[in-house]
Image 1: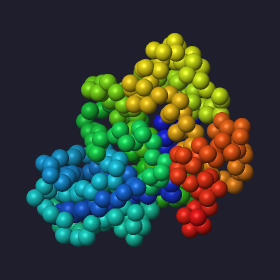
Image 2 (image 1 turned 135 degrees about the vertical axis):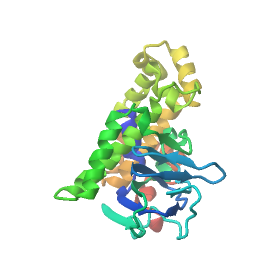
Image 3 (image 1 turned 90 degrees about the horizontal axis):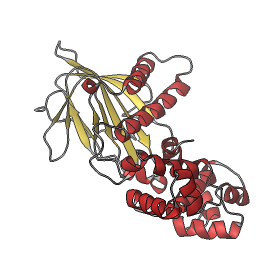
Length: 313
C-alpha cells in the first residue's frame, strides 16, 4: 500500500457514516465539536453558508466540498443571517446522522432548497498519522475550480447510492466514503498553486526522494532498514537524504520508521488475534522482548495489555 492509503487504514476505526439531507429555508444547523472524528459536507444543490466561530461566513456552491479534519465545531445555514435554533448535531450520534438516510429538514414552502451530503469518520487518537495533524482546520475545495474530476465522480456515486439504496449498499457506501476521504486528501496534498510552506507532509509527499523512502518503509516495515538503505531508495547519499527527510518532516528517518512500526503493531493487536511474536516479526523485530519494550515506550503500556484494552488492564 502507498503512504496515503496506509494513513487511512491505520487511523480510521468503526464505520464511516453519511446522510443525504434536504434543507428547506429558513434553516441552520450547528455541528458540535467531536474529538476523534473528521467530518465533511458536500453541497449538491442550492445556497449554503459555512459559519465558523470568529470568522466571516463562507459562501458555498453546488459541488463544493468542505472537510473538517480535526472535528471542530461549525454550522451550515441557508443564509448567513439565520441562526441555529436546534441543539448541535453530534456526527457520532446515530440518531441524528443515520446511515444512508435521506432526511428532510424544514417544511417545503417554495423557498430555495439546499441538499447536502454530510458524514463523519471516526479516528483512533492513538493512531492519528502526523499527516492528519498537518492539515488545516478547514479544507474547502470549490467546485468551480474544476481540478478534481475523480473527486466529483465519487461524490456523484455516493449521492446516488444514498438517494436510492439497494442491494449491496452496506458494502458500497463505506467504500465510497473511504474513496472520498482519499480524494479530499489527495486534492489538498497536490493542490495548485504549490503549498507556500517548504516543510511538512504536503511538501514531503511532493518531493520524489522523500516519498520514495516513505513508500519503502510502508511497503516493507519488517525490513532491517538503515539510513543508508533508505537513502538508496531515495536515490541520494546518506547525509543529504537524512538532512532532507529531517528538514521536511521534523524527525529523522529511523524515528519515523519506529513510530510507523509501533502504530502498525497497535492496529494488528486490536484487529487480529495473531501471536505477539508474529506481530513483532511483521514490524521488524526478531525478539519479542525487544518489540514489547519498544511498544511500551511508544504507547505507554505492554502490547498484551494494549490488546486486552483498558477494561482488562
